[in-house]
Image (cartoon, one colour):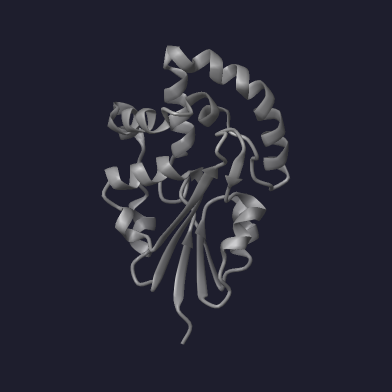
Amino acid sequence: MMQKCYIVDFDGTLIHEDLEREFMKWLLRQKEIRYRMFFVSLFTLPINLLRNILGYPSIFKSWTHVLRGNIDEYINAFIQNEAVKTIHLREDVWQMLNGGDKVVLLSGCYKDLLVAYLEYIKRKSVFTEIIGCEMEANQIRVKIHPYGRSKCQFVNQGKYNIGVANERVDHFYMDMCNEQIYV
């Protein structure tokens, strides 16, 4: 019998909101970095938006470049801040994850932010593997961004895969799964 593997999206699927978007909103309220973020995003945002519309992942992140060297400090401040308490879990979807041999979290969210949040809510242990966005050393160029078409490379077809997601752009990897659950 094939091993059963849940491949689960995070934003909009396991939480109602988008974690990195909430983090960025919080960052923009920090006066010491607001204008630098706006300036760098003038270059990165148009490129990323076009790629995302076509189902391809972002290749740049402005906030990681602006915060380079202090990313963990800001993530910890955000996690401890009241803003993180506005994120609502989708408990019905979390319940579905019981019963799999393996549960892979496949998210376009910045991995360190995602892991910090999962540790904060004490749910990191639910996942066998967490695959999120990772950056190159310069903190502006994306190394891995599981989004849209790029999520397909993480589907192990030697397993019985159950995809769980909420967005149309997730259909690329969901189409490769034996079962699809759209929430």
